[in-house]
Length: 218
Length: 205
Image 1: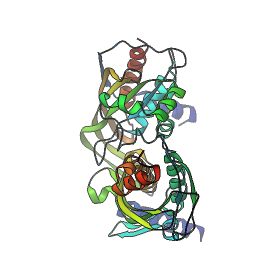
Image 2: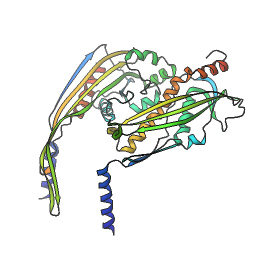
Image 3: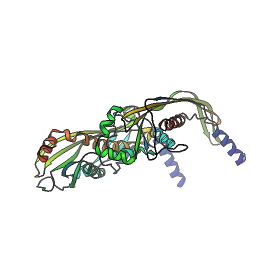
Image 4: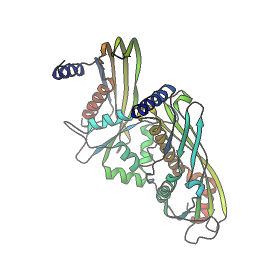
């Protein structure tokens, strides 16, 4: 088989993907707006001790998506924020609901750092992506003359995330946005396995980031 | 010869993959933030003994290999940053006894115990680290005023890190940051510290 033909087959396979169904819901409690110089931070909720924790790469995915493209926002890096405001947003001390925020931001050194950053909104993200179902079987054989796989695998993933937007100036919850995505991935194999991956988490991330962007700029 | 070596390496790698985790050896990173809190208007001393500065926790887990967490090299930057955020000034003292006229007291931390767990032990998805610190507070004339313990906790989800070493290192770092946060939050509430602050600040603490 010619290299060009192999490349075109691989590219065609890469273009195939499982289907994803995504829904986003928004509840607004107060009006929002961002001016030039205002910033926003996206934080993952990390409670103690062992409890479900939002994936670090999901938090950075949402932050990155909000910080680029049309209406890009000034998004503060999560780790930079945690270091600059230490220890107020560490798992042991972080406010669990917006009513605790005014007391914390009254601390003069913290208030000064938040002011330096121009922080307008704080977004807490909770949730995770789980594999909820899987089936099929696939076996591979390797011998002196070569090898191959035969079978069929499928699995379903579900992403469920909720973002709470806190207004740092008023200490109020500005609103909540939830993003859910479900998708089935497949891997048929006749000699070569061909993965058809449903990008569930990626879909939940971009939906949530886009909605958050339009939410805060009103 | 080279082929034989490659076969050996492949067999070792396959054995490692088949029989699971073979332990890890990690050192906690030395970058720590400074607490953003109102400073106590007193200069203090910091005594870090050799046992703390060279602290290494070694443990063998049955069928899970040998594990090593090196915390000692992180202690000086950690406590330097902690005290520079909490007090108007601090300096290292090389011995606990003796008078120090330029400081109001001396803080001497030590690690009493470290425990950790890996996901295979807890059937969870987390690497977890607990560190029990003991803090002694000494007056500037060397007299021991009291002590208190503080247990810090850190966890790291295995899916957020590439391998056991990275996850364990992250959990240990989170535990160190938790110790700093806990100390910052609790310091003014410890009875021996309250008494010391009252006497040093003339009841304005």
